[in-house]
Length: 70
Ligand SMILES: [Zn+2]
Image 1 (tube, rainbow, N blue to C red):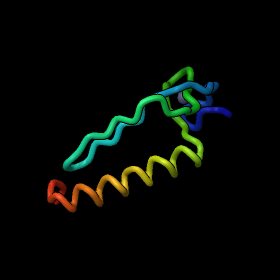
Image 2 (cartoon, rainbow, N blue to C red; image 1 turned 90 degrees about the vertical axis):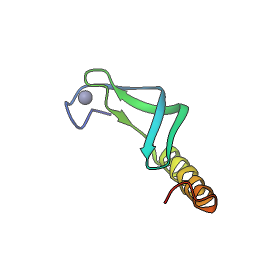
Image 3 (tube, rainbow, N blue to C red; image 1 turned 135 degrees about the vertical axis):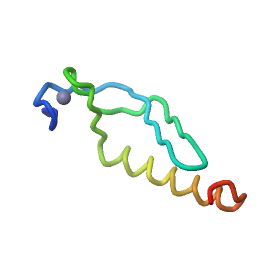
């Protein structure tokens, strides 16, 4: 696939996915993604995006239960 930002070539590699929200900072290491060789933009496939969103949902529910994330 081509990069949507700069039309550069993307290649599959393992990246670190980070989420910075109020109450937590999540680093998920070694997520497969397509990375643009020109600008470094990362593109995740649906399977990975869904898994990460499930993780964030579970994390936020747990955080709410201990009143860290208001
Ligand atoms: Zn690019």
